[in-house]
Picture 1 (tube, rainbow, N blue to C red):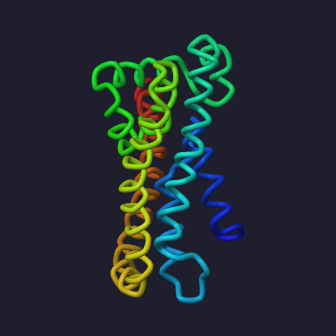
Picture 2 (cartoon, helix red, strand yellow):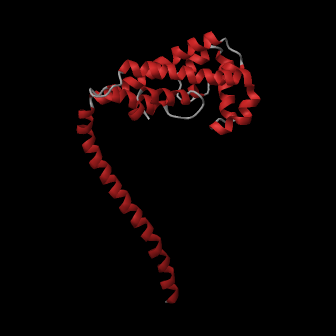
Picture 3 (tube, rainbow, N blue to C red):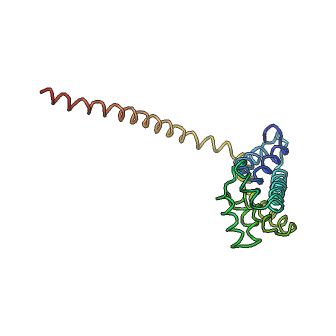
Length: 202
């Protein structure tokens, strides 16, 4: 999606992620940041950050209004179709009840909670202006950090290949050792089972 559709792909994936669909933003934004480091690629660093943040706001607003006008019963009835369980909702509601409106800001930075935090905000009828403000303030640093990680990964990819080569050899040796251990462990019980039979014959 990100490779072929660029900003549109980023927007769709990040909006869906903020609408309670468990798409890992870590993969989307880090990869987009990586592409933005390539000279020939049309994605820009700040373009990726801004589009990702706006997408988070759009997806979050959709779920906010679902919670506000549909309420908790609607979520419990149809949430399973978007991988949203009652446990997710209860967890988000507890966070919101404890920390109030700042939960939207904090929740947008936490990896697991950020996807579901818009629901209790809508159910609690948090003022939409505050929801927008805290969503943007919380989503921006998250997207900035992930994009920066991918960007600097791309800028230093030549170093990564140098340091990864010894690790690849080590991984191959460990895999070979694991296969030999597994094969010898499977052969051992058969030989042990035959021993009692031979002693009984004597």
